[in-house]
Length: 580
Image: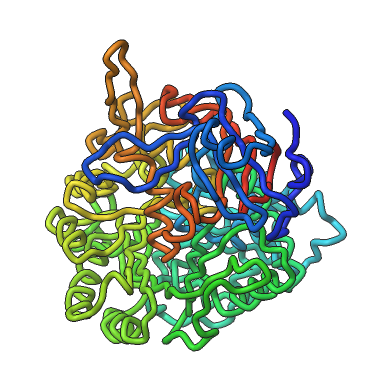
């Protein structure tokens, strides 16, 4: 496969916003480019074409046939993509934690199946870095999930388990649960917390039968732990690690879902230096109180790729740690019904104020009570307001009462969902939620009710690979093709279906698509970040953000989606990963 001269070297990122020439690319088939442009709302067939023309400013100038390209520019040099390759608009992840992903790769606890494996990974991490891990240097890891541990009796682990290992003993260690809503501390880390309050508003300090802290802190209780702040050099390392992987996976834009002001200023610095290789839409976040950080901005930086016009609020905890706020207790833990992370009064005070200040308000809601009460607040706060201009979102929208699904749609709130959560949680969600699971992870129900969704990963909680997200959305099975309800998928009626359609007059032609084309990661994701007029589809006049895949994810077998390779990721017409 040859590299397009003057665009980029194979596999090397490039951040240049202007090329010294334009170019044309074409697929071998006449319909290998999925443009995802809006045509007739009633039309279910995705619009497809063969060629793209890109100018030196990184704009798409034409989409059409080879003949039309040659007619427009007889001298153009057409580059043909490999056989079976297809082009899709740049893939957007609507919910990531970019710096946290880069940080999480250092001591990764994902995939551990028992306590012994967790301890072993921490021990090996310490032993591999004897010169850099001092006795009082904090050690942080991410990714354990007690719901997946074999022979585990339930509940949370304790500091005693970490302290029992002689290599770990005496060191301040924090191990974050996979969803980042719970941290597990060693005895020394617990000592460094000093005297702890009896209760933590918006969180919980897990205690034993004698009232002593066990070492697990939930949600806002984590603020009591004196973790050291990240240095700029650490943030650069995390940023570079995260953006490199995202580009490798075909992601051209992300919605960063919890950008504290220090992160906002860091991203501005990266944008000023011209080393922001993809588009970023930040959600400003404050641990406590009303946002008092950087003012909103659009198209910031050398390449105009950085934006801040959203605010993130966290209503409740997570289902995996029994922290999501529910109307009724958990079926497998009747002692709790979860809790609100932000007080209900603060939600009532801040959401209307943010809307008045013209921020897009994106509220994390997982439990049915969190969703229901936040919908109540939005219902009042949005009266008389221009919803099209504000585009408020519910992040996760995971567990809802049936009536609230329709209410969310009627209020025109965007449901920002993460399909991989469904296939990760399905191993315990039925037992944890009981009958409530039937209106949970209800993506198809949102659409049937007339709602709008946008898809994301919640990276690093789940894989940031958008093909993993796509696979989970359309199959609702795990990577091995299984689910608690069999190979047809977990509650398959909630799949984002790939409809078979279009039979030609002479022979059947089957096109599979994700409910009126894969808009959840393209044009609808762009809409959710106010950028649908610039990106999200491949049309003349839009930015040339696109991805070249080695096979057609719209027609291959469901499990083959996960085998798909990204051949090239292009932002502003410039190859940021791969080659063609």
